[in-house]
Length: 353
Image (spheres, one colour):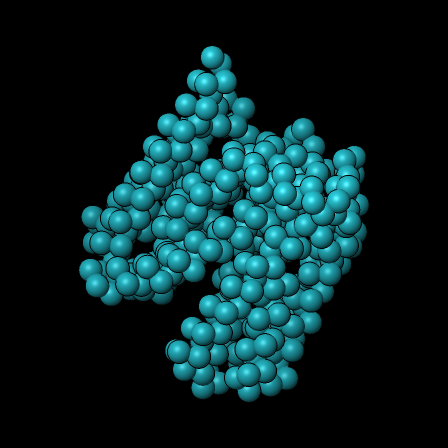
């Protein structure tokens, strides 16, 4: 966007409005999928919309037109992953702990695609980005069309049934926990490249760090079912939260690019383990009836945390520096992890007695 003359203020306004619309749309996509039992159809619709709007960016350089197109792009694209997760979970049924063994293909695709994609972008015009994205989306659309339909057995009889979902206290508590765990992570996604370069890290090392992070995801996604079968939910979530806290703490106290690069090894134990556990736990909390809505609510909370952490993280970064931002993130992860572990322990104790 900078290459066609948009100011930082214009880009910020466009991004914030588009993300807000996407956050609002996510639960709606989920409810439509559950109510009409049309998970696959809506998934195909959102992929098609994302494909068309990604190509439409090539038609104009007007700020207003790009603003509108980007807003629609975000509304359609934001729901692709949660709808895909919901469709997969419907097919897995009682084998939800195997989710990670399928999710691993996303990390593998990222690892294999990021380096050649970046190489092509550096040597061609910016328009190539949209053409490559459209090509990838077309392949996704083709393979999504080949997927079998959802084998749901429970129906949502009325729109009023969704009120039950929003009264689910266990779901509410977990979504709040998710917000606080995800906030430092999403701030890291935004500010890690800036901080890494500020302490002397170069583009090559940064790319290597992203590759290491994706590689650690592969291992955890593939083996996550071992954790979920061997340990109780509260212990798995506590492990992930403590790993988050330790990861941010190390980045805060280390000033060597090489040492900070090693913290990317924690990405699997933090992001990947939490995500697999969260997807399965939400599916269990909401049941088959509201599976799509539950996954879209989860994605919506992550989007909210992204907006909040980007703003708050930027304020801390500018005011106190990157190390302070990571130290603050470590404290949040530690407190959130211990608090939610205690809450689950109290709930478990009260159920036994």
